[in-house]
Image (tube, rainbow, N blue to C red):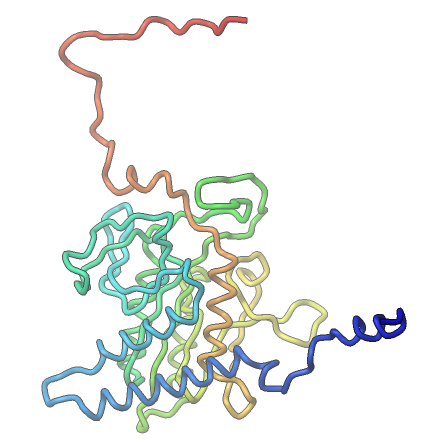
Length: 315
């Protein structure tokens, strides 16, 4: 083969331009998952018996699908979050937890037992799932999430590289804020969206910045996040609550809606994904002590047995 022909052959090995759908592949995936969640939730609602609640089934469906979307290093589970002082937030629908580094405080009795207690230090995110969003169910979800934020969760500096190593630095940024969200499969037709948004705003105005609920998502309708406008800019940034600016600046709601080609579930997943992949959690080596081990240690009482003084190492 002539050199010119070989040059042409090598030059022809270029990536192929795909359709616009492929450029938005992850967004399309979230859109289809959102549609499937709505269909499966509606099927559960229609098939429920008079005394049967479809809520737990819908929560399980959401956990299953979220677990498929997030990388496998993030466990998507349910259960109770607790702190080292013995306080709990009660049963949580969805907890994104680091079970690689952090032990559970109380393990499940069986594989399908929901009575599962996890240390708040090991949680990346907590999500409340509602079948139908009303003002009452919104208040219930807000109450659960605010309670989770109020558990004793030591704040870690950004300078931590992994859960058992700190290299200093980080300034006044936080490395482990707790993400929180409310997800509803549908809105009660008799409850105007504006009423729910006003309630969400009114509650969050009464909270300090680290207690605020980060996201409100109604599948197929809208997803709300918090944002802030940097000085000198005309566009809002999404508030991540890592700081420092978004822990100090006035915040506003940012929305993603299907009529602007944004999947509400996709907006939630994008925000959650950015949060967990930028988080480094608390000091895992302190968990056994924080949850009750080693507080009653004392010197041996039946005689003095001491090692000889340490010798200096030889040359």
